[in-house]
Length: 90
Image (cartoon, rainbow, N blue to C red; front, side, top):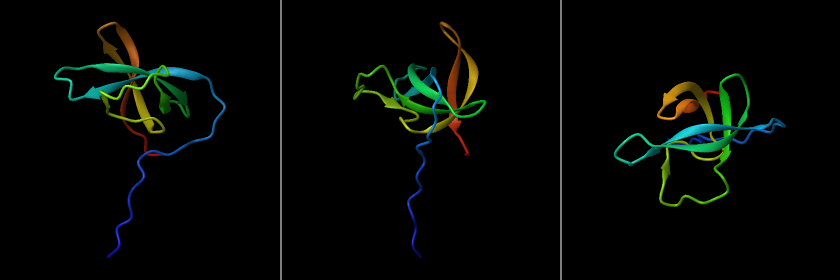
């Protein structure tokens, strides 16, 4: 039996504006969120395009750039933000 690798993140072509969503950082010991740039694909689906241009090599993002994620409005310490909750089943 041959098992093919699953590609979790796909590129999507679009001409939308850039929004900011929040991605959870893993292995931090507490809830920590990174604001990242994302393009809206559909109502609650976004494609992560990156952060603020810097490389965060010491961070482990729950979802990486080019991932399509489903977002929900979530109350964080500094207000209510769009937060990436799961990979989108697009």
